[in-house]
Structure formats: C-alpha cells, structure tokens
Image (cartoon, rainbow, N blue to C red; front, side):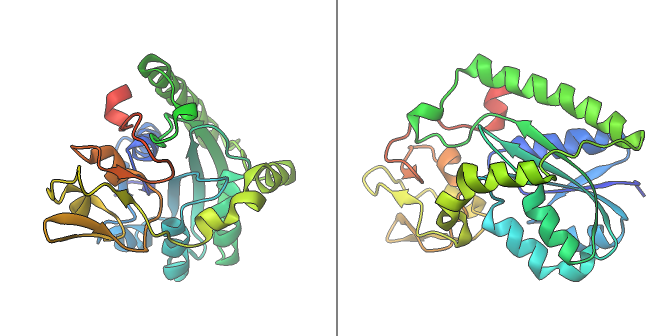
Length: 256
C-alpha cells in the first residue's frame, strides 16, 4: 500500500493534476482519488497521511468540499493532512479554510501549499490569460510542487495559508464581501436553451447531479457548487455561471 493518499475535488482538472503530481513525487506508489469516487472513504480510512486538494472560490473552499469533510468527519480523526489549494488569482488563507474544520475533527495539519493555476472562470473576460501564460503557470506550479515534496520529506513543510496574516488576507480580501457566493449552493448554471442541443454531457459530469434533461433541453436546479465543469465541457457553449458570455472554456488539458 502507498504511504500517502491524495484526495481532491477538481472542476476543470487543475487540482487533480497538482495532487496527483505531489503524491507521485512523494511516493511512486502513491494514488489520488476524487471526493466523488465511491471508494474515497475506504481509501482515506486505509491511510494515515492525506494530501487534500481543492480550488479556491472567493477565498473559500467549494461548498462540496466543506460538505464532504463534515459528512465524513470521523474518518479524519488523527489523520495527518497536507493541504493544497489552487487558485487563479487570490487565495488568502485558502489552505486554512479546510484546516480549521479538519482540526475541529481532530486531524493533524502537516502544512499548506498554494498553487496558481489557470483560472476556470471563462465567462469573465478580465480574468483571461493567453494559452502560453497559462502553460507557464502550470510549469511554475510543477516546480513549486517538487520543492514542496522535498520540504515535506525533510520535515519542513510549507505553511502557506495557515497563519494569522494569511487569515486576515483571506477574510478581508474577499471572503467577508463574497461569503454568500460559497456559503450555499446556487441556482446555476444559466442555460441558453437556443444553444443547448440536449446532449446530456453536462448531466453526466456534474458532481452535484444538478442538471437534468427535460423536453430535450438541459435544466439546472439549485445545487451548483461553481466548479465550471459543465461550462468547460459544453460542446455548444450554452452554459454560463458567474458571467453572461463564454470567452473561453478552460480545461487543464488545453494548457498542459
């Protein structure tokens, strides 16, 4: 059995890549599983050291991640957890958002790592970078992961996002002003029924089972966790989340 387990939530592939890369470099036999996997709790129970990864939305962790931790709180007791938070622009105390909850459930926090990756919010033009710039973000993140792995092995792990100053940055940088964005699930995505062809792709990949096909068209309900997975996979660009226009569908594979 591997000595370390990666557990992640990933909308467009960024966090999946980061966690998989980290655990493989730490232990060649290391594996990573999504929180959506039916075997994830079995895997967590079988490992003492966990690398937990998730994207940051408005200086907070996605609602789906918070619910996963709360629902399975007993599984994290006395587990050693290293937290990876990925973000497009700003995190603040991204790693600590889960660390505070996990510590409440008696987990041991080993460290935290913040990694800038391509922004998945493809319906806000101001956040867009060139393909080459996004590729360079991945290159730099991989280099930082290599350093972080060695530091964890040396007993001197990164502590990004875990201190008081990080907490203040996250709180006053975004979370106080945008707490409502991540406190609950949302009535999204917005679906352009004229563009929707009813292919069902969004239905099959939504982590919340939030979208259904009715009368040949996709219909959303009120369980969106803002992961942008459906947005980035829609073949006709019929979906938007926070903005009103599709500027770019931002899957990790496009930039790697």
